[in-house]
Image (tube, rainbow, N blue to C red; front, side, top):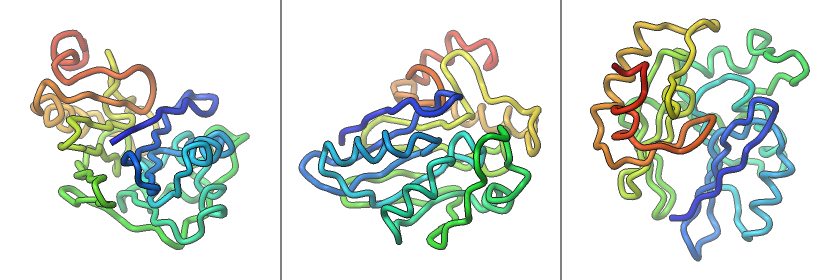
Length: 207
């Protein structure tokens, strides 16, 4: 598997493009703004968007969604139902200069333990509420990678003071995550990559 991280938007979200070498199908995780950059990355590599996966519903992680689905109509969009309930309405007008995204007709709810599969691309869904009710992480076990969205960062964790945040649930989710194998590469929704072992050792919010 190959992947590319594109830093998008004012909040510098890590939008990920994943694909298997030699095959055209690609996933995009968290298309937050800058659709042109994402589309250009696909074009340069002669990739076709086969799935969009949203780790949660905050607008900085979904702001390019409608632009991508206009170019690739019919592409499945995966998201936890608990965030889909509110992500596509006025409550998500944050920040105000971003437009509200329309609920995609191809939205497919995912939940704990679900497998998302396209050829050799395989990810297991972990439901990790706390930052939002429907936060998910994506475990690519064959690749020893974990996409954590805004649940876990290098040296920090997701905030819980926004609507839908819950510090108790976040603590429970983090306890699950840090129990995973230490060699897993962590790719958060913002900031640098890290590993589970590193976060156990240095993250002050996990002590």
